[in-house]
Image (cartoon, rainbow, N blue to C red; front, side, top):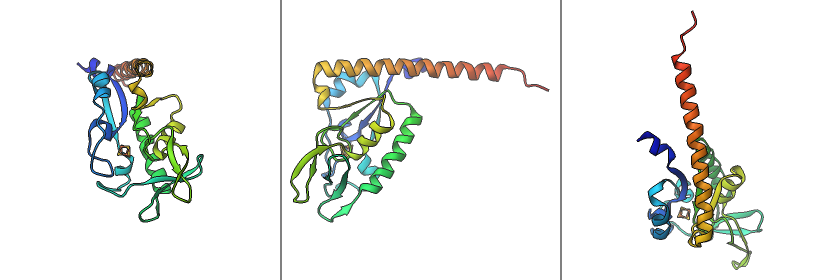
Length: 196
Ligand code: SF4
C-alpha cells in the first residue's frame, strides 16, 4: 500500500481547477476533463496564492500593470500595490513545495497570480498593452526550472497532455526511487550497532 502511495504522481495545482471556491468572485474553475484524464494516478497539492496572501473570498479583482518583464500586481479599485506581499508569499510557498517534492504543476491560465503565459498586462490607461506571467507562476518557474509546468488550457490538447503526463510520470518514478534509497539507507544506519 505504501508503495502505491509513493508511486503516485504528485502535482501542484491551482486550487480553483480542483473545484475549490477560491476565485475572486467566490466561484471555481473545476476542470473536469483534466481531472478525468489524470485524477486516479495523481496526488494533488492545491495552492491558491491569492487566498494564501490573505485577500479573502470574495475579493476585488487584481491585475498586472506596467512592463511585460517586471509587471506589478495591483488592485485597481483601491490602487493597492500587492507586488511585494505576493512575491514574499510566493517565495515562501515555493520553498515549502520544493521540500515536499513535486513531479509537476498545473496552473490556471490568464491569472495575474497563476498564469504562465499570455497574462494581460495593463498600461497606465487601463488597457492591455502586453502579456506577461503571473507572479506566483514566475517564482515557481524561476526557482524550479526543471519542473514540468503547464497551464490547464494547454493540457486540453491531447498531444501536449501526453507529453506532460510522460514527463511527470518519469519524475514520479525518479522520486520514488530516491525515496526508497533514502529509506533503505536509514534502515541500514539504524540497524548498525552503536559504538561503545
Ligand atoms: S487562479 Fe490561482 S490565485 Fe486565482 S483563484 Fe485560482 S488558484 Fe487562486
